[in-house]
Length: 228
Image 1 (spheres, rainbow, N blue to C red):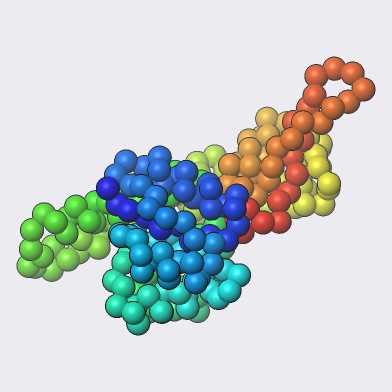
Image 2 (image 1 turned 30 degrees about the vertical axis):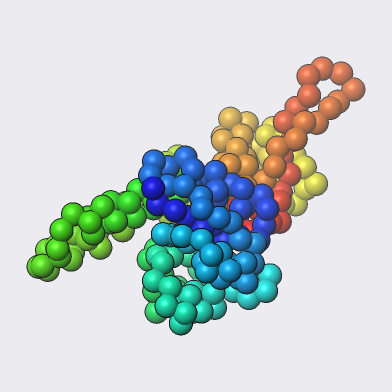
């Protein structure tokens, strides 16, 4: 089992990340940490093979945690988890030895591909010596899981997702029908995108009760969450 440390300060996001890890064959959550200090303490006291490390933490940032890990001699593999798309952040993560980079918001399938690629990498490391260029290329190729277009699942376009997100952010809560009217799409399409936002932690679903009839699903934007 790949013993994984989840480092994320948002409780909802942390629970989601831990649940994702536990759903992937070969992985288990060894510990969780809500700050950089907690993460470093966990590494000092707990056997950990992999760290899911968020960049934005309340006491420091993930890059500094990664730097301190390496300075302390921790060679534990790290997958940086963040919404940040700044090139400097990516460069620093690579320079400090991050194994992979996972950009929020993401779905379980995205996490699964990263972890399965990492598991294949670990299994190849244990299969025998790496003696030739082809061996090295194959080894690192296992870390490069095939990405979905734009990092989004099939059937979800960036343009439509941005439109749904903007419509939801501008309200205190909206149904799929109301969002569909706002963006000029069908209710089925709007619901599919809203459910994607719920799955990635960027929105929450509640029940809206009217004067009569069955309650409707109402969606609300979450400023922090899995996309935090």
